[in-house]
Structures are given as C-alpha cells and as structure tokens.
Image 1 (tube, rainbow over the protein chains, first blue to last red):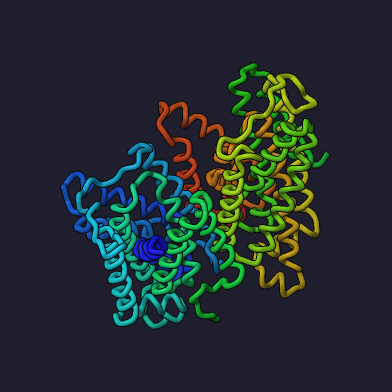
Image 2 (cartoon, rainbow over the protein chains, first blue to last red; image 1 turned 90 degrees about the horizontal axis):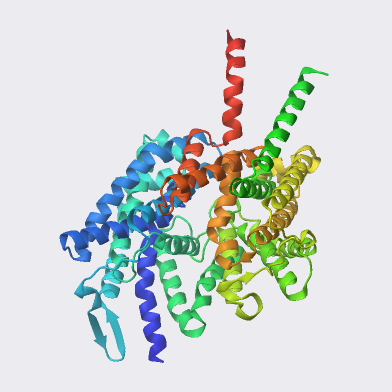
Length: 292
Length: 325
C-alpha cells in the first residue's frame, strides 16, 4: 500500500513542477490565443541555463532559478517583440496559424542547435543537495521534490494574485477577453502581449531550474515536457492559471501511479490517451468554465 | 496556339526535361537524393489534400506513413504478398486509422487539431513499439532481399525507384488538380477559409474533412510502402517518428499550402539543401534539421503563404507598377 501512497505523493510533487511548466503556455494562449509550439524547447534552454550557471559558478540549483527566470524573461520579450508580433499582425484569422508554424520552426531549430552546440549527452547537476532525503515513516521524499512542490505552489499563487489584484494583471486579462475593447480603454495591446509572453517564459525559467535536479537535460528534453505541457493546459482549461497547476498534478499522479500498474513503455501513451479523451468529451478542460 | 497555351507548353517541356535529367547523370548518389526529393514532394502533395486544401493542420501524418511501410513489409515477409499489392492493404489500413483518428479529432480546430494528431500518432507509435512478436518491436523489420525483382517492388538500380517516384508524383499532382478544380475542392476551400460560414451555407464540414483525411492518409501510406522498398528496412523511429510528421507538413507549408505546385517546390528547395547542409557542415550533428527550422521561420516570417506566393509576388510586381503609372 505504501508503494502506491509513495507514488501518489511523489506524483503530486513532480506534477506541481509540470503545472509550472504549463503555466506560461496557458497564459500565452489565454491572452493572445496563440499556441507556442517552441515551449518545450524554451524549457530545454532554461534547463541548460541552470545547468551552466550551477556548474560554472558553483551555484545552488535554487539560487540559479532567479537567473534562469530573468534570462528567459528577456528571451521571451525579444521573441515576441521582434518576430511573433509581426507575424501575428499579418493575420486576421481568429486562430493565428502562422504563429503556430513559426514556433514549430523555432522548436526544430532550437532543439537541433542545442544538439550541434552541446552534443547529445544527458547532463545532470552534481549537487549533494539533490540526493538528500526526508524520511517520514515508510515514505521518502527528496529535497528537490519538496522544493519543487513548495516553490511551484508559491509561484502559482503569486501569479494568480498578480493577475487578480494589480493594474497590469487586470490589463492582461482585459486584453485576453477583448482586445479591441481593451485598447479603447487605453491599454497598449502590443506591450501587454510582450509582457505576457515574457512572464510566461520567466515562469518557465523557474520551472526549468526546479526540474533539473530531478531530470537530466538533453537537447530533446523539451519534446517530452512540451507535449505534456499541452496535455496539462488542455486538462486545466486553456488560459486558466490555477487550472494548469491542478492539471499538472493530475498528469504527475497518472504518470507515477500509472507506471506502478502498467509497463512503463505504455505509461507515455496513457497521457496521450487522456489528452485525446479530454479533447473529445470536455474540450473546455476538466475545470474549464464554458465561455462565450 | 494562344499565348497562354504556348506559355503552358513551354513550362511543360521545361518540367519534363528537369524530371528526366537525373536519369542521365549516371550517379547513384545524385539519383538517391533525387528519389528522396520526389518522395517528399509526393508526401507533401498527399498532406496537401488535408493540410493545404482543407486547411487542417495535421502534424501526425507519420502514423499513416508508418502504417503503409509496416503493412506492405509485414505482408511481404510473412505472407509472401508482393508490396505492389501490399501497398493497397496499407492504404486501406491507413483509411481505417484516418477514420478513427478523424472521428475523434476533426471537430477540433486549429492548434487543438494539430495537437490531437500528434497525440494520435504517438499512441500508434507506442503500440507498434510494444508489438515485439508481431512487428519486431523497437528493432523493426527487414524487407527480404531479392535484388532485382521489379514485380516484388525491388531493384538494385536507383533508376527503377526514380521512375516509380516520378509516376507517383505525377499521379499525386493529378489528384490534387482534380480536387482543386472540383465542386468538392471549393467546399474544402470554404471549410478552410471560414468553417462557420461554410457550415451555415449547408456544407457538411466534418464529413468533407473526413473524406480529405481518408484520401490524404491513403496516399501517404503508399509513400510509406515506397520508402520501405527503397530502404528495405522499417523501424518505429524511422517511419513513425514525430519528426517525420512535422517534416512532411513543413515541406508543404514552405512551398505553399493549398496550391498545386507548392508541395513540389517545397521539396525541391528543402531536400537538396538538406543534403548540402549535411555535406558542408562537416558532419555537424543536426545541421540538416537546423536548416529546416530556420527556413520554416524565414518563409513564414516573410510570406506566410509560402514560396508559391513569393514567386507570384516577384512575377506580378512589374505589371502592377505599370498599371499604377
């Protein structure tokens, strides 16, 4: 029994980090209605940034998190400012497919650029902290699991509060609901888009730093987590920040408990099947509210 | 002959000459690049029916390609059925798969549909990888080597495959042309441009999208059989890989979605430059795929409608200026 309880709680801990990965994606989709297919590759970039700051400067993985967040924030801002904005404005359609295709190109490019530059090896940070554990009765938790859960929860709460109570957060939500009406009220939608893309990637930077002690980084690590992030966004309801957190926890549990019950080679397919099932029966997500 | 007719027949002669040239180079290396270029032109044309003309962005066509490659190989290795017949079995199985995938995902739009196609392709890939006894699991299957057996879709000379690929591309162009010119093609264009408006005008959108998916899947599966016979080896990573599904779409999108010649142009640009990138980068890992990503970003950034639209813009510019003056 304690095997399953261990799997359940471990799944919740990693799931919270998955939720944090998906959060930025959900924010971008909610505000701009764009799907950023390069999201997983940006996660890979965040993990490499963390890896190299940790190994080169001897930093603690958690101390590297703010650095990764700042780097990714500016990457996101520049990406929106110089590329996506132009493509976005060329399209009048409600679902900007051009951005989706552009970010697909970015995804392929970043993955193989990392492969060419850094090689195919999986890298793990060499920190004694990553291997320390807390033992509670039959249950064992690693420090990265505990830190991952706590920080992911705090960041999610912080972002929900930011969106709800600050003027900027309200401006972002207003633009997401109705771009024209928001700009009539004097909100600069271009700036809002740049900021929400940048905030999404900044959060992803923290997620990358939290994930690295649990999962080694390689050029294609983003493919697995990027796909999972999409599943989570759909589960939680697109655009919902708290939904992304709960969706992450569901996927985390499914993965860790699922691999106790069925062969590991099938566990990945289980997540995709869940995705297809939700898309079929509840396209607005498990926690989504029917809108419009 | 009218001026328009002369222009068309000139183009026809040019294309014919270009198509025959690789046969006379006598280099098996050049021919194998030419065969792969034609294969991707064919695959992009197959994808075009669903992804271009009907505007449904599928990124999971690797599933149909893999089904075609595995079906003909399995029936050949285990039952001794010629791949020339096996490829139709593959096409039939791909249609079944397209109906199952389509019924569960074609009501989705844009990005959701794209995601659902990737997810479906990954589920099918996982099933094949786990079928150790039936399909060889992750190791895949080898096509029994017969050397020169044209009736078994095998030959030691690349010329054999080149001619077949040329015929495949010609037939795929014909299918695309027929669809584009038909009433059905206009319905699909309506679905692509505004689904709600099409639905309001009484176009049964889901059914028509499903037909497009079935045609597209069957054509892609036949391409899979061709690949299996050309390489004489199939494995889940090679024929079901997620990369492949994206690359098929990329070739068509760069060339020009929903156009007749766009998919061919895309393949003519991408495949030879991929080969150049591979040989000039000095074996740098991933240089070819980096180029794919970069070209995709550049083309979409410059002209989201692809190469065909870029060429049209270049050709039409002087005419427009003349009118305004």
